[in-house]
Amino acid sequence: MMTLCRDHDQMALRFADICSQAGVRIMDIYQTDFETNTKLDKSPVTEADEVAEEVILKALEQDFPGIPVLAEESFSAGFRPDTTGEFLLVDPIDGTREFISRNGEFTVNIALIEKARPVAGCVYAPARHQTFYGARSAWTAPVAAGKSVQDCSPTRIQTRPVPVAGPTAVMSRSHVDADTLEFAERHGVSPENRVSAGSSLKFCLIASGQADLYPRFGPTMEWDTGAGHAVLNAAGGRVTRPDGGEFLYGKKAAGYFNGPFVAWGQSAD
Image 1 (spheres, helix red, strand yellow):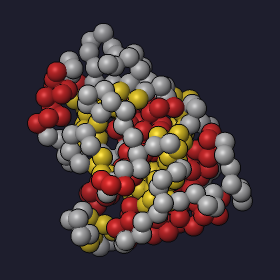
Image 2 (cartoon, helix red, strand yellow):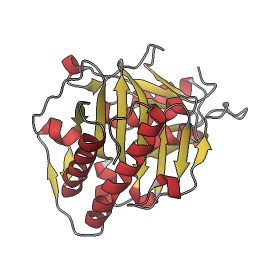
Image 3 (cartoon, one colour):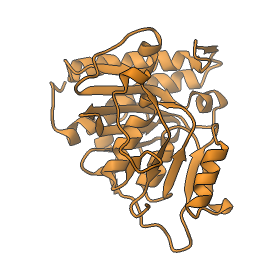
Image 4 (cartoon, one colour):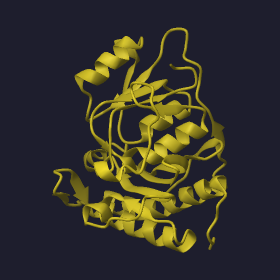
């Protein structure tokens, strides 16, 4: 397989295939009467989260040796990698609640962080057979679990200018709050232009020109956002703090918790 590669586009492509491999194990469990447990932070976890992370970590160690990996389940188990330089972010299943409810809106996420910024990433929705990936440019492809993205006719995606009729805001299906609604209203989002979606797919809706902003004031972790942020950057969008400041990664002192952020499309401000 691939040895250590520094080409960000090739890394994003490889992330896509690794996510697809993890998707095989995820979908095997998705079709069963799996059990749900609760972690110390009160968030849900299933066998699929743990098995998928094992697949991903093994592949990353083989293909990108020496790059530290910050992954959700190993972090929960007490592992603390060195994130002072470049590192990889892994969320084996973002949207575990969506996985449990079987609505298909869960994703597998891998991102490369350099100088506190996401520079390559992949978001894969195995139940929907759809992958989004990118570094210098962003792409999507209809990828069934276990298949290679290169065999599935990738299509380039990009953000859109905000429509004359007004912006569409995508919001968390499980975590909408008053601050989010107020921000959307202040930026011209009418009630009929609010779209609910789970997991990091929200970033991908903006990256593919289906929505214009994603405000998030509730708590998230870095592994929840890194891959989607990378894809959105590659598609011509950006992610900022609500005050417009830069949204950065490697926040070890904060336990890798994110503060509030807004994901923007091409012409939002």
